[in-house]
Image (cartoon, rainbow, N blue to C red; front, side, top):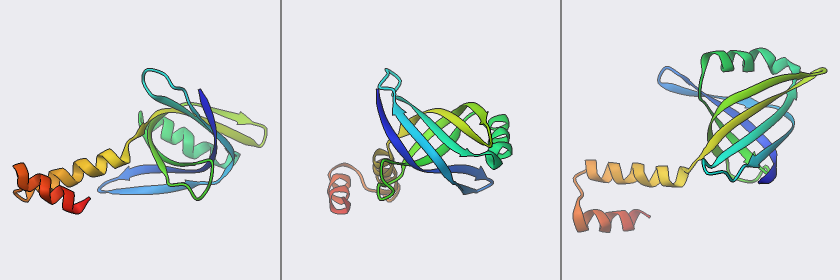
Length: 136
């Protein structure tokens, strides 16, 4: 297992056709790559108690929660995860939320989207390969 500092957390919530980002102010946090056969990560967010109602609601209405995190440094790109809330714990005037989830390979997703678009535009075979190479 590898442990990293959690620097930033956003909850992505689908509301109709739009995705709403909830930026969560962290007091502290860790993210652990469990390096298991299911490629799972544990994310612990240590927060102000004022987030308790929000996270209890999220746990009640959503089996899966998409989150974005920055690991180690604020300047790093976001990593996106599909998670579930394992537990919510009150700790004095603070709280923590434990998530368990898998990382989404955003690069792979972008490539797949690009290929689908090119195929929809009528590219195929060698022309598809040529156009894809031009764009990447």
